[in-house]
Image 1 (cartoon, rainbow, N blue to C red):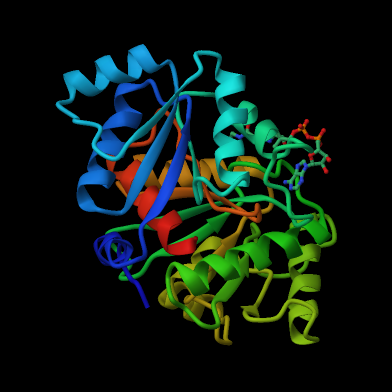
Image 2 (tube, helix red, strand yellow):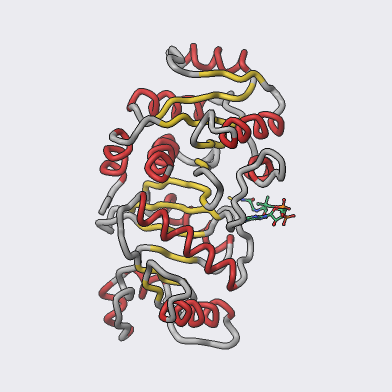
Length: 299
Ligand code: COD
């Protein structure tokens, strides 16, 4: 089991070398992350964006661009489509979001001609490392699916299980569909979905994991809290995957962990034919490098 980002980075270095296509790469923060990942030996890079700007930022960063391929395309939406095409034509094995809005790159990923659709649900995964926990937590979906229905929640769990298996090396992850309370309340839709997800898991409809719910956040991640509330079973207090009820809950939990608790993090989109490294401008340099490492392990 990979329990922290240092171990995760070590594992990424040992993986077979992959190439990452970066969409709209002309940005200092993005190129700093590319430089570090390239120096650490995680991957090679194809940078799509304004070539003049990319070269001048690289100069400022003393980044020699060794092994880097540049595709000149100053328009962001076009740069996303070209970067996606690099991946769909297998000239690169991973896609990374540069300085472009999330919805623009996601639309390129979903493009019917050149995109990376598989027929499966695409979803956002955050991996979080908080000082008080001696393991990495997976949280989904605070970045793509706005208000997932029950069927989409099944897809979110399935995508998260793949990340738990391949990136965190957890064979049978424990999944907590998060709610405000730990009992079914018909007025709270998330508790109804949680109970159904648990039942679907028990009947083999969501394999490869253990789902329990409804669970509140403390009941999901703290053994002491779970005991105090009287929650039993393998997931209570020990969840590996936190399934949030909607994008707002996920986004707030993610930013709360990072800003209040100083958590280290990584962000990915999964479910496409290849992993997508998706961090925002506000994410730290550490988060960007962690995300590249996590995607390399997933690929
Ligand atoms: N998985 C697979 N296919 C999808 C998904 C998905 N999650 N979402 C849409 N599709 C397919 C649909 O089946 C359809 O064929 C096509 O894509 C277009 O569907 P729409 O019209 O519902 O989707 P769009 O293009 O309007 O929006 C898709 C987005 C992902 C852009 C949208 O859901 C979105 O903006 N999500 C939030 C992204 C965001 O702002 N994140 C930032 C939070 S930090």
